[in-house]
Image (cartoon, rainbow, N blue to C red; front, side, top):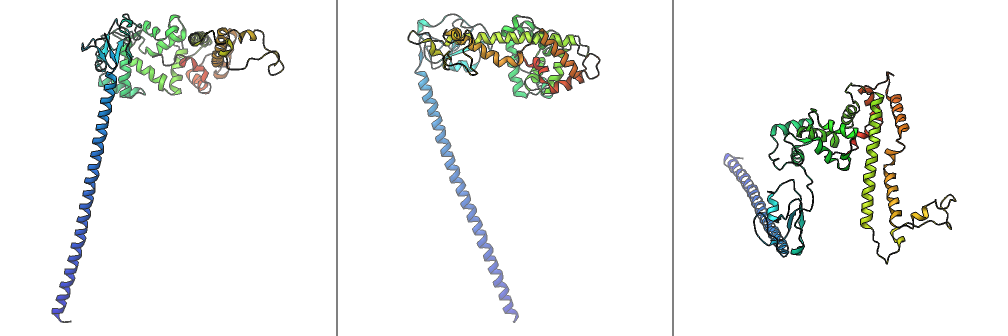
Length: 404
């Protein structure tokens, strides 16, 4: 092939390659343009849907507000914004005399944070509105308890408890609602938090207070509260065993004696009896509140189970027990006795036969199982190995729940 022909071939190949590159580049640009256009269309559709959703939301809010404002609480003026009559939801302070706010002012949260508001949707007839306090305050804390946690305390508690920042801030609000002295929660307030159990002194409640009061100054400050709740609510079994041992160790000797175990077992038994009485009382009140003694209803209608009779003996060939017929035909007393039996059955595992003799048997069994060196006292290591296999030995520690 002569040189001119070779040049033409090379030139043709170069032109073909350039054309191919141009075609590929053009296709890529076209595809990019198409993808860009598709994205624009998709974004436009999304914006349109978002706009529609926003309009639907605004319409729903407007409709809901209009429906709320249809409820007019005539004769009631908001004590904060002074607008009256209050429309929509009315909030009445249960701890103040004749204090009401509208929904917008209630959300501002400017009233005493220790007070409780009653939410009222349907208007009460103006002359029937109560003008006195509805409830005694639930929270005894000082009104002056304001402010927020410092970042230093939050960091310290995050490192030393199982709570995060959000939980700690919520706990601090609760703490402020309970602190009746500048330093924190005193023994009197702690007893109030126990409800009916706070009226009688008990060794278990005293030891739980000491568990919270880490520095033993007679006051539970916020660090004490958060640290204690961390163990009670989120603590491991090993953490609870440590503090249960300290609770048993009444004289701070570092060892547990028979007398110390005996005292705590007895206190736990008495506390459990108080819990049973409180439960039975609640069941009785609920029963009396729900009982319908209308004249057109037979007494037997309060029972859903068949009533055994002498014609149909009980299983085992025995007829009804003495008094059972009275139990099933006496209305309220019968159902009350059934409620008591149910409560006793639910709590029987922790209360069965915890008499003086039974408590002594528990003490003896504890030392036989845990006193490995036979020195007549339990070290922490002996107690820990024993408690890891027998959870009932730290049951008193959880008997009051979280308290706060």
